[in-house]
Length: 458
Image (tube, rainbow, N blue to C red; front, side, top):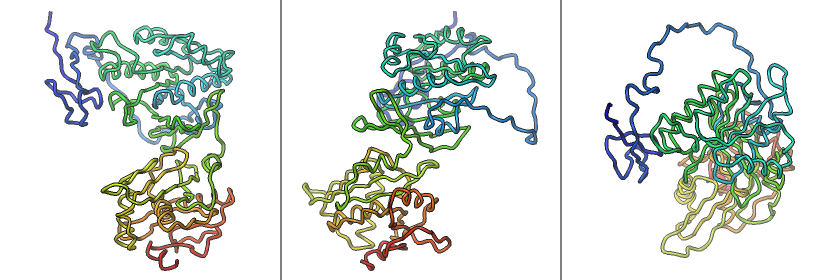
């Protein structure tokens, strides 16, 4: 009998080592390296596909097949997925515990059963849970008012049994696995949730989904940093990666697409958590600005773009006298390093002394922003707090700021301004654009080329 060999694998990034170490040199995490067995040459996984066959090539001139999409009936989910779910595709949904991943997918499959598939038959859906029993899933469906929908439920974690059940001619059109970290393969000698198990189970399920042409929805856990747990290769194997974000202190949730082979990336869907589950938010800008108060210093409205959707959010800044030996800089919903850079620009280029003040910046509503167009709104909110001078309540602000103090143009300015005008905003503080003239009503401050120009006008 051949001797079993082992290696050591980081459970965070999948790096392989010859011996154990306390810290992974690839990702820098501590105590994530675990010993795992190496598949031997006579194992089923190692010997699979030894006798191959010649593949056939084709050119790029062939007419592509029109993609059929299954409509979930949830408009925000369909938007993020590119218009619906594509048969044979694999979607990975990640998010914090208790954020609503299982609730969203249960609502989605319940809505799908009321539609039809490509053949015109009622859509058949299966929900396989490895974390909850069938009765627990039924209780959630009863609370959400979905108990009457014909969804096939099962509670199973053994991947061999799941594959045997689904590998049939009349397989379901949509299959949900909740979650991939609870599945295990008896051909891999490691605990469920490890890199080897997640990789092996993910590969088997994805292969089956492509073979039987059904939609596979995988639920994934996230780490404390907010990234999907397990091997990074899982994100490369799937067709779509969705992150379900939100703050438990707020009642809304954001579904964000970070990878999509059948649609646009960085698209978002907005949901509101209610007693009856997740409900769609048709106008997110109105939701984020619902509790905004006017005539308050340190507050302004930023006109941003999330995917293909314009969105208005409130940027809040609080400037207080320094309480300790060094000034504090706290940021929620934005990049703290970006704020520090802009504060340095204000001190160096505009002569605004901020080294003796504590500054706190918050994106109201818990939304996380990443685009550089937030720069001008963040700076104006800070300046409003420094001078205790409220900005006009009907003004929107956006623009990127460079290290020399110049204000640069950002994409899709007209789309941002149209959204602002729709919500009753009549003024704008935006970068100067000589090539394109906007029809939006600007204030006497108008367009800016540099931050210093703002101080000269004031």
